[in-house]
Image 1 (cartoon, rainbow, N blue to C red):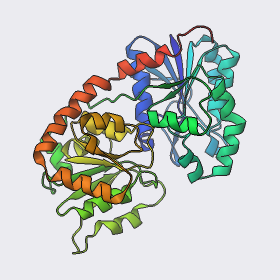
Image 2 (cartoon, rainbow, N blue to C red):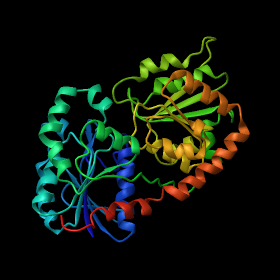
Image 3 (cartoon, rainbow, N blue to C red):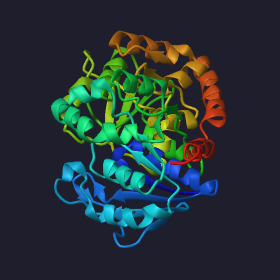
Image 4 (tube, rainbow, N blue to C red):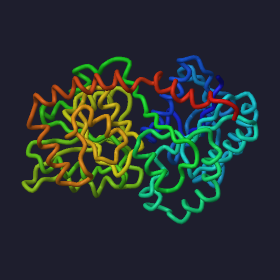
Length: 385
């Protein structure tokens, strides 16, 4: 099949975290099992623009990536160039996979595909959650859903969610308007394991048995403040926090790194990628993911791919997988519960070793991108559009 994927941001725009990595994982997985994949995306990279070819597609791991510029209003990713290029390709496509909501290209391409009788799969990517809609720009988002997203969802072949929690949120909002299909994300580890020297370059000053990692953008939904407080509460624990500070939270968060006795319980690394990211995850004893909500939780999946245990809040989509490893790795989004879970894990080195083996087994069994891609491709191959 020939499959088009819309993603507002794409590699190398790694500042957007899990959604960028998981979209490329899906696209590459589809290509690896024989499909022709075209990604329609933009050159947006935060306040900057990617240094990419805007005239011709870029080949990346067997995927054709079409980078297009945006025009005002920038917030909506308005891109006549993207629409024009998609219009030329759409009649030749066998399916369209739309990632994200609240952006101009999604409904635009969905209408274009429906006019061409191309099956559409909508993937909200965790954005259609009541708490997220209410948390910021509620009135604008509610109006946009009514005017744009409802029609696209209702006419879709399927709605692709990555966790049962995301499916439940759609139902709570009355937006389960097409068949909802739960297909989790896969995870791709590095081409090689980080060397001991690379791990020590990140963690060398922190003793094993006390290493706590946090990998996410510094945003109110991700819980960096809770991760810091939990580390501060466990004597000897030390946290390294990695991620973009897109809304200016770091200065306030840094104050929480000082314990009552004046000692410092952690540090900020800023954004990390490539082998430095894998060294951070591989060298940690535990990764904390105390998010309000995650449709899946790519940083958690990447930690598991390195054999590192994860403690996550119950709003993280990966929680059912973590419960397969150890139910105690999933806690309510409550500070005392997170503190207790971290203290118990760091106090039991034998348990950490057992969890490392279980994590690697789970990734091999449940999270290969080719298997995930085959299930997504099947959504397009079910009768007429």
